[in-house]
Amino acid sequence: MLERLFKIFSCDIGIDLGTANTLVYVRGRGIIINEPSIVAINKKTDQVLSIGEEAKKMIGCTPGHIVAIRPLIDGVISDFEITEQMLRYFFNKVHRGAYSFLVRPRVVIGIPSGVTEVERRAVEDAVRNAGAREVYLVEEPMAAAIGARLPISDAVGNMIVDIGGGTTDIAVISLGGIVVSRNLRIAGEKMNDDIIQYIRDEFQLLIGEKTAEKIKILIGSVSPLKEKLTASIKGRDLVSGLPKEVIISDSEITEAITPSVNAIISEIRSVVEETPPELISDLMTRGIILAGGGSLLRGFPEMVEKATGIPTRLVEDPLTAVVRGCGIILEDIESLREILVRI
Image (tube, rainbow, N blue to C red; front, side, top):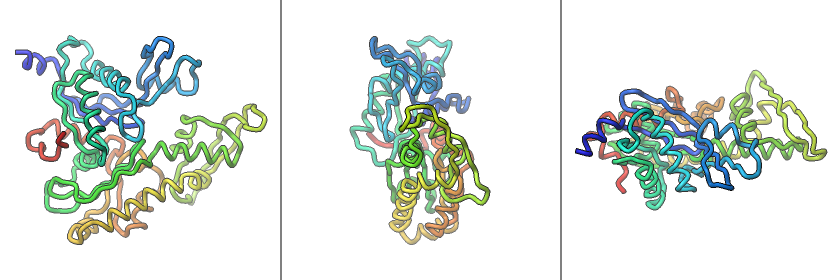
């Protein structure tokens, strides 16, 4: 009886629980939540003040007793209780107007490849404690491949590179399984840190994470552009302590993020080198697919293609590939059960 009530009042949900952003897909409604994975907390009372977009606005702008934190680091849970509260907030947002005690959704959630059993268990427990009645885990490169509509169940090679906020997942998939994979804890947020450090070293200017991300999106490129781009950056002069504004070019951002980009390219080459010859021929025909927000950096597909000799392209709407894959799994969970991670 209770199970039937849960099904009536709950929506099946697919979640891309990312270091930078959390996206939520609701069966029959599509992607309805795309918010930062950030929680603002009052340290005096341990009270959660805001979650998501509102919490992101507080970064760098809060008094001492209020902190805006990310409960996930490098794609895995670093603060279990805060993650649980964040998930419960998103569940309630999806089921707004429903009786909260009857909200017990089935959830498909993406996790980075290569995480430990303890880290997988932490994700499952956090989702269950937040109110899920059933939890299914899927590795993010597999979800991204499904979201890209790749024929993962066929006897052909499919290569996906998912560059997220905290991790980069690289995988070759065939016959519904991952043949070769790498999980690299270098991605979008590491590039933000690179930009912050570069501007500190070169201009003696201190900027925040939000500014670094904004500049990366505005003029970021993995290689020099034919048409030069520039942007102004405002921050604190480390010498005088006073406000200062400088103009920075795309070539300087390229220089800043080159170590991280080269590390990702090196891992992609390693995966290609380990791929069985029969699947390499498929990759030459089918190409490498890039997903995730980090893949939107100008020139990334061209750089991967040059480094590997394999045609490379962006998936349609790279930011939502993983959560779209989780949604497709939700729609046909029985036939896709074999690709789910066993706990």
